[in-house]
Image (cartoon, rainbow, N blue to C red; front, side):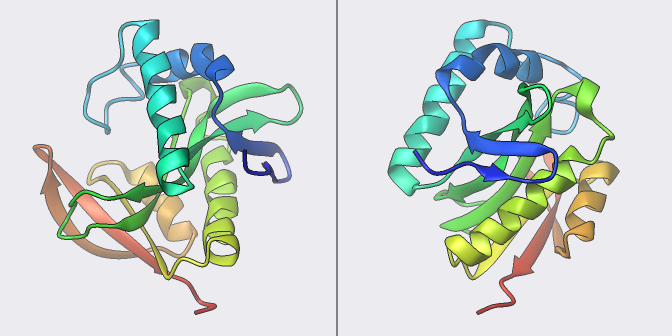
Length: 175
């Protein structure tokens, strides 16, 4: 297991089987899925399978989504992190993508920005990636603001899984 990352309010660590309840709360909420495919999970088994899939990504690619834990209470807030995408999206393949998703009651508190900022630093300083990419539903203004606050640059709009998405890029300033 990789060493957790600490920010002012958060602990970022690999997702564990014990995160299944939090993952189910997150992924079963239709409001969370408005901008991400509109397919909330309906059974705990789906959340367990999702965690197993993420853990397989750690083994295959050395990276993946991590749990976001509130330091103060040890609560699971959601996930964030760097995923290696080995399939084609927006004419890109084999790239690192920044993502985040949080349980609804933790929205609007700056957690996604705080976690994402730490992962950008991790990707550039520790992983030495040349560039990070991110995409969001075209209508997801909040997610787009987070990316822009982090310095991501809008590149284009594209269709993915029957939805209009926006594509962002952030180049490693140290390379």
